[in-house]
Amino acid sequence: GKTTLLRALSGLNTQTSGSAQWNEREILGARPDALVRRGISHVSEGKSVIAELSVKENLILGGIWRNKKSDTSAAIAEVVELFPVLGQRMSQSADSLSGGERQMLAIGRALVSRPKLLLLDEPSLGLAPLVIEQIFATIDQLRRKLGLTVVLVEQNAMSALEIADIGIIINLGEVVASGKASELIDDPALRAAYLGY
Image (tube, rainbow, N blue to C red; front, top):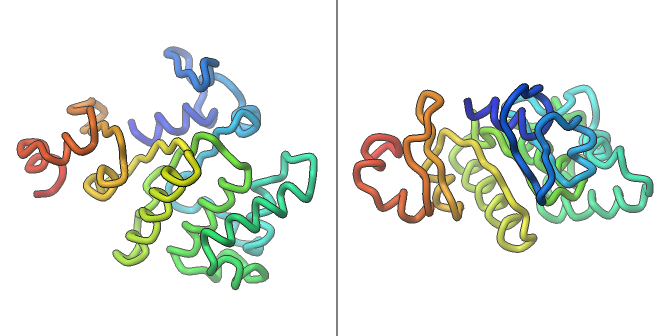
């Protein structure tokens, strides 16, 4: 359900019904490359970097549709500012990175396209608690400082709600609750049933 939704929004799944709009334009049925040009980037769950390529080559792929190489270089510099460890690993292959560094690279590659809407599918999956904290802090920073709209699918619901404005809790493909994230966090029944305490 949740991953399918993100894949539909990014053009990776072909939808035969329904509607979704971004900036008052229909996006369902559009090709992924067209959606990237319209400012939508998707970081898939799990292995979303190309292991055989270097960190730098993976980042360059994020800007491959750009006409000016200088635009891509500037965007990569901004990503390195966000994730300094990537700057230290530019010539290393992506498969030599830790899980957290790979996730930073995946998010960084999406950011090189300078999106207005970032779709993140399970960014904390399989990561150490300290790295998860860093990833969520970065997502919050992107949202607050850059004004980036983020659609976040995350099993770690409490961490996601702590940085969200709006939350939607989906269980077995059904929406069970939605509203202001702060109100969802404060609801004792939701906390007990879906948020782990």
